[in-house]
Length: 293
Image (cartoon, rainbow, N blue to C red; front, side, top):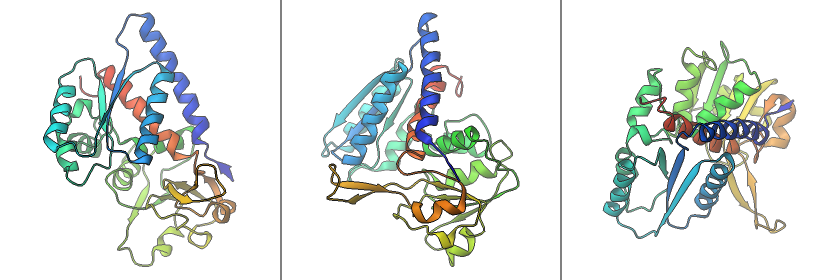
């Protein structure tokens, strides 16, 4: 069993980006600028955004974090988005999800200009990705592809089963891994809450990707011997023995499943760090005008 070390891989890519930014700086070029809007006080969102800011600082990006109170109105948020759409110094920006219930997340997604949508959620980026055109790919699927490349995992002709059909992870991954590309050329089965006899599909997967948000849902009996297992899930579980008061669990019961796998991601330290790296890569592409020229 080989551990797919997202933390180590992310550090390697971060160092490469850092060197490229240093080269840009020495040439007198524009330094990439990533901005983020954080609405409310969601603990997980605050931690995630803080990680993005820290990563920006490390690689030499400029970063802006705008915090807004949970009671901000939808028009006020949309007004701020438009300001950043028109700001030539900001190469890309994100609005951290989830948003308060009174704000329509679809309106927010549609308000961000596609060329600054480094989260890859705008329909134009989704459409371009589906057609195999240059696009900003959603960060978690993009990060998973980088991890697969790094470890030289063969995907062509293999059966990939994805559990979870969200627009953020499962659905875009099903498109990316089935297209005629590398990584890609998988035969993909996309499972979800209405799938009957889920274990029938997961136990036949050469590559199993769990992205359903249920801690330790995938057990050994659901995994094929020698499978590649990628665990996207991360859930906080109360744990009084920890200083933080919680422990992090993935969607896969790691200790039970790991011995059956050829490759497996840990939680934490697997997909999570790669998600942040993918966002940096998208921002660098945005600064260099490599997607929308």
